[in-house]
Length: 249
Image 1: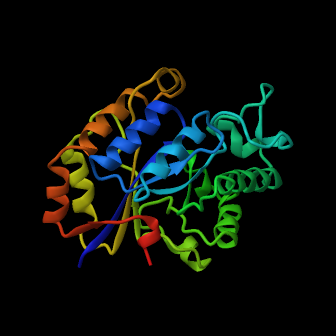
Image 2: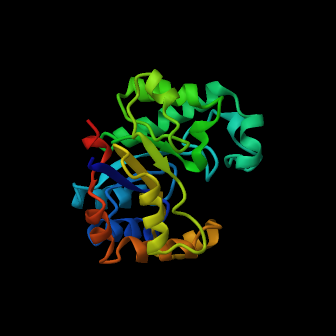
Image 3: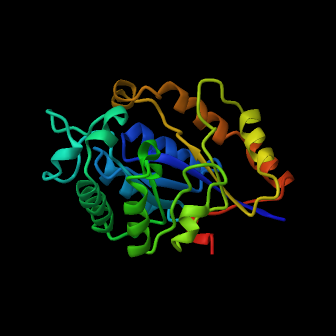
């Protein structure tokens, strides 16, 4: 069986270094898809780059735990500085009406650029939380968008709701010691799966990323691995076809 593989780069729009890293990983490597953080400073720049690279699938990376909301009337989602709560606090403090309001506005902001997202995922996988998942499933149905699985091989919730996704999702391409072999181990773990998404975070390091993210220098290593000339050979030898969420069928 040919495995259809989506390699998605999270955090498009975060900074120009992130944007350029994602584009390089698409142009010279195996990244087929990315997801946009609509509340970040370099969203317009990211959409400009996406326009120049129409083969790159661009979805939305719903945000609840980084930066500030797009909405100014979601008090349960923000702290005293009007920034989103940390991941540690957000689920205890939020109310679901504010979450739906903010996520809807993030989706509408994406559509305002004249482009439809290829799919939905979320920063820190917040859409997998029991309070958030019903909201995101509703939005996926309303906007007719596929949705990232939030656990490997956990497909039941999405598919019961009539929302498309890959059969498997893997978040393990992440950390301090990644290598080409790390990627191969992930591929080999999912041999025979009809469709798989692998989450990645390639980037060039710039000041906003270095100062704003605890996961910064590792992204440069991801970029190096994802653009390694041997990667495509390893995919071909395993009968793997690179696709975007639009090609899931």
